Length: 113
Length: 112
Image (cartoon, rainbow over all chains, first blue to last red; front, side):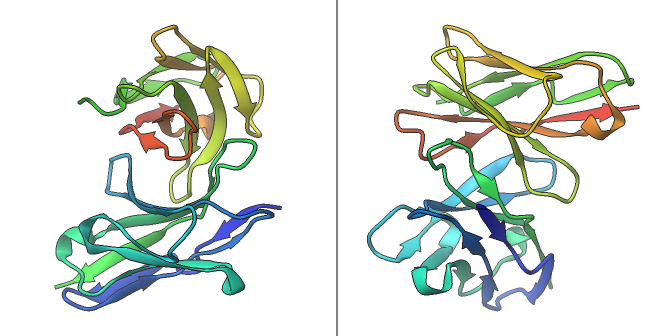
């Protein structure tokens, strides 16, 4: 069955520190992978995506993610976080032949001043 | 260029009532997907519309129905509301190929 696991429900980091959010997936075919961010009371904004090619992808707001097929992972990273990065981050896989996106449960990022 | 818009922003209904949520896709997009996001969870796929037809459906009961209009806008209808239907309902649109979905701000539905 297709699934996405984000092992960390909450992560707290200090402003200026580096960040890594984990995402593991289970998918039968070559996955299309996405990271979205959701600020309180708002919709989902696409940070970055991976379809094929270079396994290190750059996104908006200084985020990057690395696709590791052998580990079925697509972890999100940022070298230095800002208070404005506080939000919930969702990893998603698809759409496959049935067009839907499969989502992780999200990781809430808390920034310490 | 306006992104995906949804209306209303918030809605309060009572059990057993019916509700209609509306979505206008991003300019140039012809495909609309609907998701339900319960508090503290990731979105769950409800269904997707393309060329005014339901193309794919997630694991939701028939109480959830939809429609897509010739201008690609879409409605989500929920009948016989249950307390468990309280959630943020997200609309996403995508263009040709449908690989990247762009989301609206959502409609927060509260069922009392």
